[in-house]
Image (cartoon, rainbow, N blue to C red; front, side):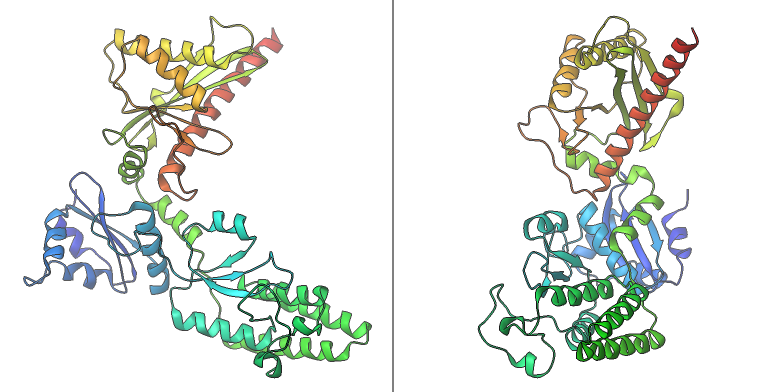
Length: 435
């Protein structure tokens, strides 16, 4: 294994994000840099560093880095990683603050485009039927985007949802279509909204094709003024695209690609914190039941070690004592058979048992473990539909952000247990048909 000095020497002179970890492998600080080599080495060069920096450096045992294509990508990736891992020494971005987004109020009769700072886009979208674009970490870039939209796409800029009774200054500047006085109907206004949506999604070729179609439609209807506006808009956008190469960075995709590069064991401390486990769950055993109307019923157990599947430790169970459809009883049989053998052969016990199911499945699993005297092993279950996680002693489920690396790992383990059970069930059905 590389020493810390060797890691510092091998850092590239390129933009990216660095992750500082302690001796337990926990991420304690995430930072960004235009030059990873210069920025990370600077932590170890100054004797007059602030007390917080000195405390951080004293805890560093290992440094990982993730190169990015640009400083902007590094900025977005740093923000997303801090939100997900909540490192101890990162103060900014750990609360609900975020970079600004543009928010298109689709729930309104005449939608407006607003600035918004949000923590959970999914929940906000359900409440107000809005569409969000961003984030925009660069304030000057955001101002340019807003200026361009307000200049060439005449959306209303009223501060309230209710339309005023008279036109505003933007109407006289020809930057508002003035639905307040009936200058434009909902159908034509919806076309402008569609244009803005395509522009903000960076679907510029689709936008140009859409404008071309609008221009032909207005010409057929002898609406020459509208056709002229669309023609001018198309010319401006075409000219702009010739001069500027747009590149949209999707933070969600950027984060997914990053998490795919990270060793899975780095996510385990996050899972420990999110599920309130006594130790980091380095060994996880997950169970699932598969049957069709009670026939050829089987159970599966998959084992993950340090966040990765250990397929040599997978086990499958043909249900022996249960007839008919009774998932609870089948789960109890599988749990009983598995951990009776663990006790008999003095095998290592897992750090976490994960059950595919809801609160009822969790209760059945705990009931069987209690009979065996295995009350110290943490147990959790994950429901299929909402993907809520249940833990004993809690009335309400644990609801993790859909982009949480902890939820992604739990989901992956659950899906692997389900896949393994389904494959065994299909195998038994094929054998039954041949016989």
